[in-house]
Length: 196
Length: 196
DNA sequence: GTCTATATTGAGATAGAC
DNA sequence: GTCTATCTCAATATAGAC
Image 1 (cartoon, helix red, strand yellow):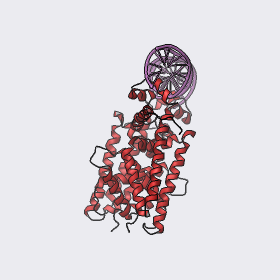
Image 2: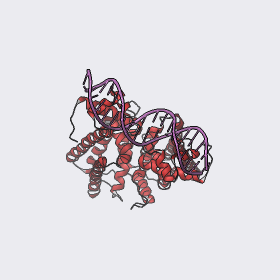
Image 3: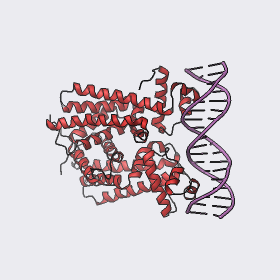
Image 4: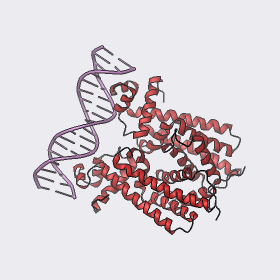
């Protein structure tokens, strides 16, 4: 986490992130990353200790920024409904603004967890779960939301639907991210409708 | 698709599927698969032409079975609400019954699409989308469901939430798959509740 | 900060004996 | 149907010159 910042580093992380998102972490070679950056593979090791260090920087940066946004939003929200809406909007926003990081986190989470180095991913993921579930519980308590049978399950359904949009969302496509976010909020809050 | 069936083949596909689900397709070696099957890596090639052929068989078998279940359910369902419920239950059932195939499909879909050999994944995925979206449209038409702004978006939210459960569902954990399915249906049909 | 050159390891796959 | 033996290639990573 205590890394030396440089424009070149950030550039490489960005390029590598796009490739990881597209072909997977294991499916991307350091040579390809170096090619994209216009240098030879050996030169990459001047900037990073290893391929893992690159994905590590991509994810840790993204996760700390996202958690910070979550916490800011929570302290500004007047009630659980606003808080939930804010969290959902932040998440969709990062699908747009940090596509590669979201895609890699989403796609490589499980396989990266095998390595000790990436145990912090689990920790952050658990933190996020606690934060969202807290909002759902608050909303049940003050009756903004129906009594849910299980806020943990509800959170996971939300999380999975939101983050997965990164796999089909196209910044140049016909759905703007705000449109997607609003449609999702409508579905989440009102449901499909339960009339017989 | 026209493959010679044998118990040994099926066994290898099953073992390999578990490993692909756990470590990813690119992260699993043919040697590891052979080890798990109790043979040497060279011997694997008596059964399969390549590593890709193994994942191909895993996915194509799973997908044709799933699509068949979907179609059976649709022809048996008396109305759109029943049809939607049936589709959701089939999907959650396969998260339980075909964990590895669901996980691999979910996790490797995007990267496999790079290869011509796996273009059929896109085709099946599109078929499934048409089928689900048809049910949503039917339900809007007969007013079983609220008029949705976009049934395609709604379908994708559903699909992503349902298939992603494979990443955290534990067959020996505290949530039974039927419990998860029913909680999801409640959320989908009724929403969180939109009271101020 | 990048290059040249290369060490080292492990990957997918093949041929032919048993 | 499996093993022995091995080919071939590509992967991550390193050392030291420029």
